[in-house]
Image (cartoon, rainbow, N blue to C red; front, side, top):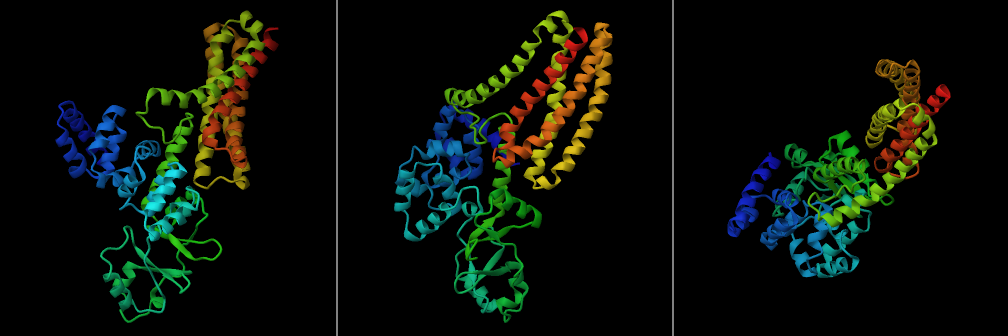
Length: 450
């Protein structure tokens, strides 16, 4: 719904910009649209229109819009702002979102922003910044409401009424000791239905899920999904002191970013790649990955070069070679994608990888035999040569088994070596299936036609 809305507004904005109706555009950006929709419009606009749109966003709305932008675009706009402008823009933003933005800035500018903040906000922000961005500590918000276990529910209600508002996404109040050690949670729903005279310790939940500050954000997302959490307390891994909380909106961002990372990494792109980035900037980013692929292509070509004499002797080999490589590449990608997905969901570990390997080898063998027969018959009918059908059929079986082996083992091995399987897996897999496919096909052809 929001995306469709933003798309229709994109057309309206473009028409207004072309007509020079800047006041109408300003009203739409600052009054009619929500910050998330404004961010979507900025990301959907080419650089020239984007600069005009950003200049029309009121300063008091800049921070709200910034938090919804991709890291790449965030960095572009933040780098053009001085410390005073940054502090003004980030005044009403949650601490965890401010921490995410500051991590995209030079340390000198970050230090200026911290000095410009009041002591309480600075201490809270420094606490979040002390943890890596991809951990629970870097994800958490320090804005929490806490109570002691030795007070009544009625006292808690009176305490809540003293607040002008409570932090967004608050579904529970955290119960802590006098030294701020986490004890349990007190759901708001339970406060409303409990006897006001009952003590907090009598109605609180001491079995609540707690998240250590050093927990990876992907593990946090799995906990939220598995236990249907709306929010969860973050504690110090040693002292168990309450540090902050993580809410479902932050987890949704993690899930989305992980999905984008996996998809973009398959093509060798940054998951924060700006769709409308300038041509030179985009060229530099893609050139590196193209260079890596060129190296793998040379390796495959070198294998073909070994059998140059055989190819000249039997021209049909040159026609059929792409089929062998393509079948192996697709079969390997199927296994690779399945294992990477299983790793992301926490379902694939070293302990059960052996079962999956055996399964994929059986699948590769059965599919290899099936398609070897089909392709072999097609080759025989096409070139009227029984030998070429036998050669390509055998090569298909060999390559599909090799593809299953590589597609299953590569993600496990790369993860063990702390290499992102989504980023490196597809390139290595393509090289393996090409080399094995060409080697088996041309090698068998050399034996049969020698």
